[in-house]
Image 1 (tube, helix red, strand yellow):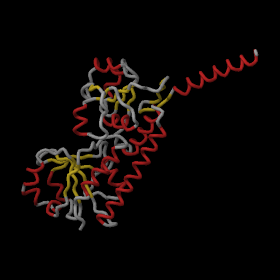
Image 2 (tube, one colour):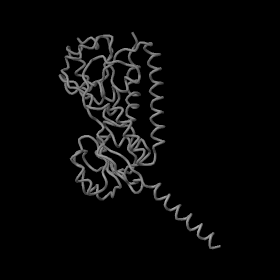
Image 3 (cartoon, one colour):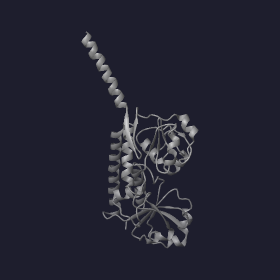
Amino acid sequence: MAVRAFFLTGLCWLTVLFSSSASAVTVTDSRGEHEFDTVPERVVSISWAMTEDVIGLGIQPVGVADIDGYNTWVVRPAIPDGASDVGKRDEPSIEQLAALKPDVIILSNGQEGLIDKLEQIAPVLFFDAYNKDHDNAKAAREIFLELGRLFYKEAMARQKLDAMDAHIASLSEQLKAHFGPDLPQVTGVRFASSSVVMVYGPNAMSQAALTEMGFGMAMDQESNQWGIVQKKMTELSTISKDGILLYFKPSPGVEKLFAAPLWKAMPVARANRVAGVESTWSYGGALSIGYLAQAMTDALLTIAPQ
């Protein structure tokens, strides 16, 4: 009986030790390794890209920055009911954050200056998602997997990425059926004013989606941190009538722009090869590549093949 009791006691201790080690998790952000004794449950995301990732992993954040702005510019995935708005992305409310008692606060580019202040409230993870020295789309996938590890959802993260890749491949087939096997060259933009346009190119998430679907760029430019360059509107005239121009919404005042003689004289406009893309965040997390691919496919299918 004594041996049996000793065995059962030892087994109980092993079970406790195993459970304790299983609940601990170590993740790596752009500053190094961070160890959490338990999987974080109360999550605050200040970065919209990280908010996308967290929601994409099935996590309901207790706090998100600038929910109204997110709903206008990001849209997908929708922020679950119950998440509190903690203020601006560059200046969140310390009082609101502290009241939420988060287990982790997640930041990204442009929010480095918040780290010291927010670490007084909870552990902080910072991800350098957009950098001129790396491939932003590849980095986004790696961050998504790392967050999957944080929440014990790494298998789900891999499945989501695989499903996204399969979906993008199916979109590519739809577009080849529409345009033919030789896909036209495409460039995406955001209109800044009647004379200035922001042009997406290498290292842009939208361009990553277009590349995966088999499209080349209709307007060449060099790679940089965000994958977007400010140009004069007149430079869009370099896009030939065989190319396609996609512009991202919301785009207030675009009707007035399209009525201007300068615009009407551009080859791509004369050829009716311009289409609007429904609001989709251009600087998002890994799954935003799929959202961008779908939104741009919907726009591209409105353009008649030549």
